[in-house]
Length: 106
Image (cartoon, rainbow, N blue to C red):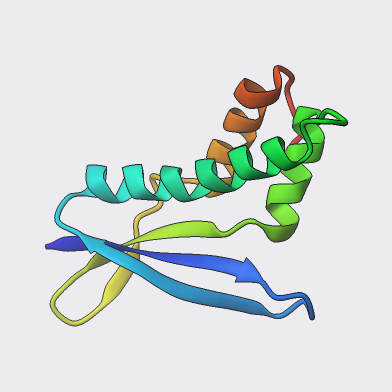
């Protein structure tokens, strides 16, 4: 059995889109890749706004509006199922707090 990641995001017109990221042999590899997708967005966004500063809540809202939300799926013989142990929004909220030094509101 293997795992793969689809990344969900919103287009400027408000429509949702998904892209296939990659397939992994283990859940741990897939989770590390999903976290990397989120971290890359958050650090890039934080860096781009470093001159004016950015609060954790602002960074989190930016992620919710424009960041890709990775979903880890388990690939079975005939179907794929969502592996609900990874919550992209929960992870992003936690990382925003760590990056900015404050806690965003849920």
